[in-house]
Image 1 (cartoon, rainbow, N blue to C red):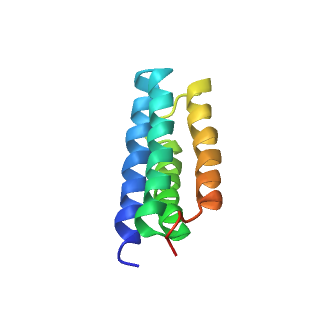
Image 2 (cartoon, rainbow, N blue to C red; image 1 turned 90 degrees about the horizontal axis):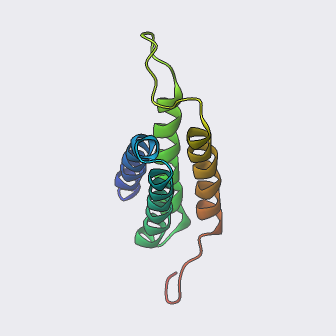
Length: 110
């Protein structure tokens, strides 16, 4: 359990960084953000040697990204209404679910 908290925070940091990066360098930033997210999801499962590690990182990523989609009272927002933002949100969530559900232990792992 103590390992899952840092993995959750790592997923959240990856979500925030990807949210900022995907809009800054489109389309390369979008691809880089999604590849980094997949790396964190799969790496977290590998480090924890359990599907729970991947799920913890996915939960952190989703929490951060969903919190960043809300509009502030001042009218500020992180995600603009555009194709890149929707690809990041929906594509990232699809990749997160795929990584969390299809993760399998490697040879020699429990």
